[in-house]
Length: 521
Image (cartoon, rainbow, N blue to C red):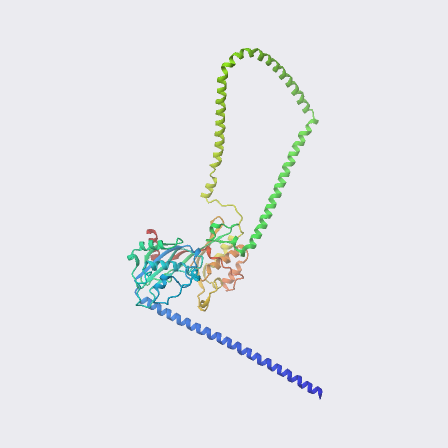
């Protein structure tokens, strides 16, 4: 009986424990389900808000299209993006902007801590335009409408540190007529006087037609990217090129290059030592042969000949001494007369010799100072002989041909942030041209042209091409990423300072109009 009682007690305990675990697992499952449901509800709400926002934006665009555009100007700009946070950033907080949009949005408190966040190219140009357009004075502002009084549209949103040439943007005002009484040259001059030196307005023109939009009416864009492979890198190109020497991601390549240089230097050193040893052996042989000549009769014959010559010289010297003594008395009388003239001649001859020596010395120094070979090499762009990070350009050119055409660039774009993750993006792009050439001594430039580009797409393409040139990736990996959407082993994004938006492509009529403005200005 005791055994049976014990058995029942143990079974009850086990049953209770298992029951508790089952209940706990049920609760955990329910908690997880509730958590997932709440997340899904949040996502649905965000999507609804996105749809509502898109509908509101469409309505706003319709209202804006129906509004009369009193000013519709197109600006052509060059800018150095080194000290700017890209084309667009956070909302502008300058006094001019807040004064202009005081009825459209509530005025925000200006924080000095976030002042650097607003240093974008768009905001700096817009502030200058608003000052010219009279939005700096609070008294002259209208308070009748609650709509946005202006629009400032850029053709592309460049990243922090990216540069641009002949960048095109559009300024539209719904409240005021063009500033400076519509004088385009005066608008250009006044803007350049207010802007920083790293932003220049190249030209100003009126919009070709009323509904023209810079963002939607362009055909494509051309970008360039500079890569510097020199060791060490040049400080002058640090803001305009990707310098592999200073990139810690390529430090292992420098170790390989150092080993190669050390091996070559050791080989050269051993060759020099062998060459010096050969020369020393030859010199020793010659010296040894000369010292062994005393064993032969030639040396003794030479000594006998020397004795005969000495005896003949002594006889001639004895005869000459006698003649000198006889002539001393005659010459004594003439010495007093000829001393003055003789001394003067000697002084003049010495002066002439000194001057000739000076001329020779000056001539040699001038010849050395007039060596112009270095100047000619600079004019002819002669290549500098310097160590370089090994990069196979033939492989890069071969791989760059794969990107040309209409492809899915899902594996060659950056990850979006915030609410942009929920946006549906068309990842298919058409690249018309992609090639690389040597711009300067071991400074290479990539040129890429396409109809549209995704976020960080160009920089990731350049990063993959450099990895192929260095030997980190294979061409098959790029084919798999392009054709099969297989992600790359390492998605390397090149730094922004090497990228430059070189040209915006438009229809021939608009293109000719822009070129005429640039040539006249």
